Length: 381
Image (cartoon, rainbow, N blue to C red):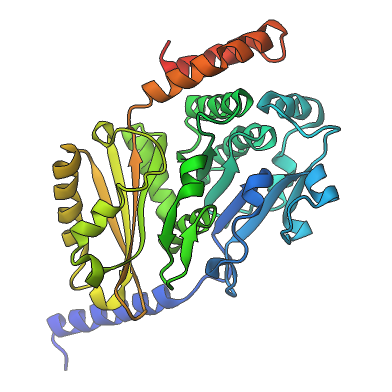
């Protein structure tokens, strides 16, 4: 006859086994959604490992009618999961699309047909220089916020060498989303993104827009990543991030994890001052057999010491490992840097677009109060 203590131990053991089996069961319905908006983002996702399994994220494309009719981008897409924006002319500025939605209704009905209750996490991809993408993104995030979804966006940001029109669209979109605090934005400077050169885990060259696929795949591999990022962003009041990354780095070649962290500084995805950051979220992907060497605690200690050494930075940090069942010693490090000083960046852009924005306000192409709200959000005045 079992003693009460023995019975309790056996019961706990059974419960742990049941929980273990439940954790191994893959959900039949995907709880993750990826939304690509516009022409630039159409070339991302779809052909990566993450989108080829039996249970894969829901992939939604939002395109202008012109892209579909003229097939300006040679990428296949599912018509049932594609939202077509039908305007007489492809929108050049963000407010062109807002005016269209004011007259014809926004995207709510189309989104309700594709994003369901079981979808919990949404990551969107957009180039903020495009009139279509910059017009849709704030509306998309407002809808997702109302629906209680955890949402974040990888936003490709035009460089200062781009046109004033592109900078105007990006500046406005960031201001609108930041004012509503509807979703964290992960900013990637377009010139730096397209100049990036790295290595895939399989040894292939990683460069250009493939970096976006790499980031999306890693974020989706980390269960609950978007949910946690949204929660942390709200807790710390951080809405803008950028990326430091090192992909496919051999631990043997670089000798230690600290040297791989140094590699992330060589090709930053935005011109910013690391010492001004107010939050760090690091994701490290490593082979399962290195789990004993790269524990969560070890990663946290290394990242903390590295930040102190390289930037004299003592900020809240979250470090999450992802262990993959594969041979080799390739390490991926993705560091999301949030809350850095954007004053110089947005002041420079505001000066570049001042003549354009003033002319548009004077011609009443959009509401003066909206523009004042955008500038106040990004410039503080």
